[in-house]
Amino acid sequence: MNKYDYLIVGAGLYGAVFAREAMDAGKKVLVIDKRPHIAGNVYTEKIEGINVHKYGAHIFHTNNTKVWEYVNRFARFNRFTNSPVANYKGELYSLPFNMYTFNKMWGVVTPEEAAARIEEQRKAAGITEPENLEEQAISLVGTDIYEKLVKGYTQKQWGRKCTELPAFIIKRLPVRLTFDNNYFNALYQGIPIGGYTAMTANMLDGAEVRLEEDYLASKEAYDAMADKVIYTGPIDAYFGYSLGYLEYRSVRFENEILDKPNFQGNAAVNYTDAETPWTRIIEHKWFEFGKDAEGNDLPKTVISREFSSEWKPGDEPYYPVNDEKNSALYERYRKLAEKEDHVIFGGRLGEYKYYDMDAVIAAALERTGNEI
Image 1 (cartoon, helix red, strand yellow):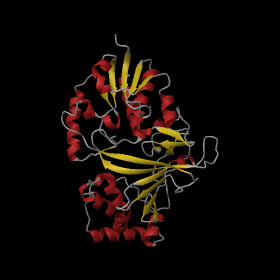
Image 2 (cartoon, helix red, strand yellow):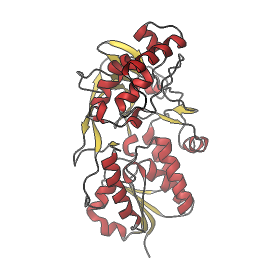
Image 3 (cartoon, one colour):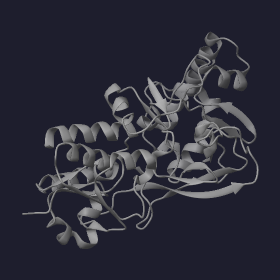
Image 4 (cartoon, helix red, strand yellow):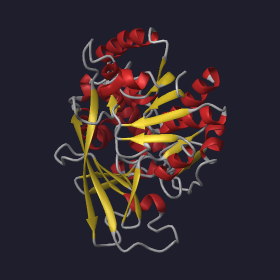
């Protein structure tokens, strides 16, 4: 008999939720991760009293009441609202695109004036059915906003011209003819008090967790330890890249501790011009209102500049490039995965899918409901 019911490869959100549900059902699990920490890309590390998002900003938001109630079992959430700012060569604009943005860009005051200006620019561009990201963006917000606040940022983010990117990437872009600065149109939103690492640790409470363990380097030995494997790593890596590499965008971070209480006055500032090499700067303390756990103002601050880059083997994969070529390649890997009857592939890398955190949790809960 195997020692474990489930070997869970990856201690991120998908793996942690699966582990929690399996343990609650009386199953024995082993969780392994090749990193030296749990929590995957939502890992937070305390620096100068600040919970620093080491793999980029993560803001929990959902309309799924079941998921919201679930995560609140493992953490209390603050009332953080995501209201990023766009910096175009020193000009500051509100994100999401709303009446503050339109007033700053065009001097318009009423929603009717803003809508008329967008429609005028859409017609001038001759767009009826948008065929790429550029055309989709212009049809949503007009040429002026596209040129200043979308084009440079998007091309830095994806490493491709906007005319070469599919329209669907930007269809979720929030555009509002109101003064609402809340980026996410979600019923529930916030940051776990104490950070995501503490929340994930609570999910994994009682599980056997081994860090700095590389599943693929000793696959046969690990497979022999459990009846079933929950694999949340890259699906192409599982199959030894036998059909080729799936493409990702990666992110490099430059972190800095500053001896001042306030650098930019906001958690996220996007740099939308093409010349600035970074896409945005995160100031982590503003996710928790600039205070420590006891409510004291923090004298220092930690910032992270984010640089988007093309992924290559050895880099951290962040954003799947869900274009036609990569979607077709993933489909071939998915068919291989279906034949692995002792393995469940899950999460952002296992399913080659861009997942918000709530969707990862919902998917893991659904899978455990069907499995256990």
